[in-house]
Image (cartoon, rainbow, N blue to C red; front, top):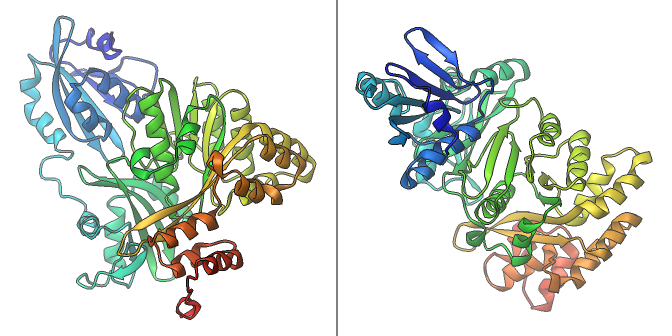
Length: 483
């Protein structure tokens, strides 16, 4: 029996069940609100509960937090369900069909995701323009015209006026959740997610600089890019079937780490029957329930920190845990312990190669603990995917992925502290799906996907990359790069 049926059984005429993310389920009547459970529901829990009773054609829309209305029969009771996205929250109202006409106007306004007559935030017009241009980012800086990043290049929106300080403050204050407004007032920067229903979600960073307030909006597509569409190798996809271990996706900011991780989580969601917990700052891609139960928690909204949420996750019966950023010693330490105790952990670091990733993790720890961490890492680390985005010839971008899969030889090198020898194993482990960044970049140049100069910029070992180009008599215009 669907879990919501138990609540619907208590519903009477002139009452309404209200489910709101971050709050306990409540029964609303003229007398006020009465809690129906002692448990606060997360956004992911509400989505899962509603998808369990929604028609097949509405489940995806519920998962994407679009306005949805449908009727449902729970035993002898027929109810009307209205899902109402409000900023970062989702409100679900359930009424008996015999009484819903009394609330018709309210339900209709709710389904439109705003009170009747409420204006859309002014910044949405700029975001819609960014979306039409196919841009990945929108940059707003006081005393400047808005700029967008298209295929990796910054372009000014010449038809937009210069953003004065007063207008900038009005644009950004209108979309900041209360918590983020308080955080911005204290720290002068803050992160959150903003959504235009039916268009896209955006990861937002608002900051102060010498000109005044500024912001960067990173577009997060509503549609999840699957592992198949990304062209991930069989060996990378096989990491999704591990029962335990640590898998890291690394790369500089803006290299597509979130997209790759999202594709892996989506693949697990489609092919396993497990419990996935994601810890993100902020929540970017929203996953609907397919074959897995997915709880998505946002740092500063649903939990205090990555480390606290990761520690709590061990008591929440997870099979897979995704850590959006392993940015401090405590989080890294708990992630390794979680992977060792029978869970599959996905995480990210801002490193450029697989070998530097291993070094970075070990160097985070005090010298007297590094031997122990090398031993733990040699058994828990299962794979590292290091990627960077390159501009394609003719437009668009493509990910160049370096892959390391930890076999017995790699594990021994990690245990013995001989990290510098890992690239040699990657070079000889091509049959196991291992790749080196230089080799991947070289293939992209040979296949005429990217220009030699672009690949050279993204290469880590540049002299070795130049030597590779010479084997195919490919000319590299270094003067053009220097300009």
